[in-house]
Each structure stands twice: as C-alpha cells, then as structure tokens.
Length: 187
Image: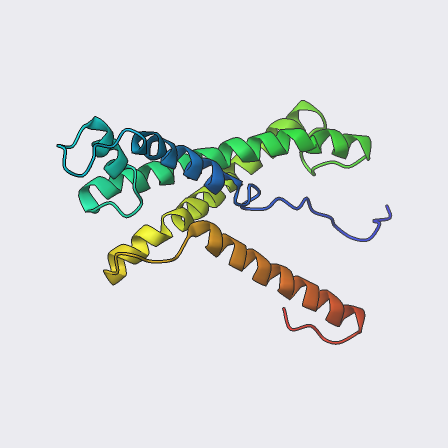
C-alpha cells in the first residue's frame, strides 16, 4: 500500500476563539455600571442603589467589591470561550469536509462517530484554552494585587493583541527565511 506524503493532522488551536470572548465578557460586565452611572446620586446627596451598583462594577473597585467584578469577568470569559468555539467549530463542519474529501480519523468510523470524536477532542482542548484566556482576562487584577499599584495601564485585550502580532511577525519572518533557503531561527 502506497502512502502519499506521510501522515497528516487536523490543526485544532487551543484558543480557537481568539479575543472575541474577552470582548463579549467585557461588554456584559461593564453594562450594569454604565446603566447605573445615569442614576448615580449627586456628590452632596446620600448614596442610592445606583451608586452602589456603579461602584460594584468598576474595574478599579477596592478589594472586597472588586472581587465580584473580576470573578464575573473570569467566568463570563470562560463561558464565552466555550460558546464561541462551539459555534465556530459547528460552522466549519470539519467531519463533513473530511468525509467529502475522503479523509478519516484513524480508528474512528466516518460519520456520527467522527463527529462525536472531534467534538470530544475540541471540548477537551477548549478547557485549556478557556482557562488560559480567562487568566489573561484577570491579569490586570492580578498585577494590581501583586504590585500594589492601583492604576495599572494593562488591559487583557492589549496583551492578546501584542502576543498575536509578535507570533504572526515571527511566522512571517520564518516563512521568508525558508523561502530564501536560510536555516530558520524557530526550531
């Protein structure tokens, strides 16, 4: 039996959702504070319910109340990572594409078993991706706790963008070096 080109693999990313869950989670977390800001009591008046809600949903809230904001942000990022990964993976229809092109997963029957297997693998990989993305989401809070500096100008989305650009630049440089037959620097 002739094997064409060796083995192949299905590229499934650990964080296939990217930074979309961060954006969704941030939008939902800041929404109550934005609405409450319209009803905040004036500076000379006693605090009302809207003032308490506004103070509760601020990223720089003091520690007892700040935990609620950052824990909600962590949980929403975790949940949205699963939601978005599931939506994107179902939309790609990877098992159907494999079947149409004559591909298969060794040891797994084509059809429903392949769908179940790939969904199982993606859900397991997404646990690691969701946890890492959620930890990146609360990185400003952790940096504030560790350093003691109250106003850290570090955002989780900015961190994801910087790392993504750096990785993309490295891949492009590697491709240029390989194209010109230099030995690459990423091994």
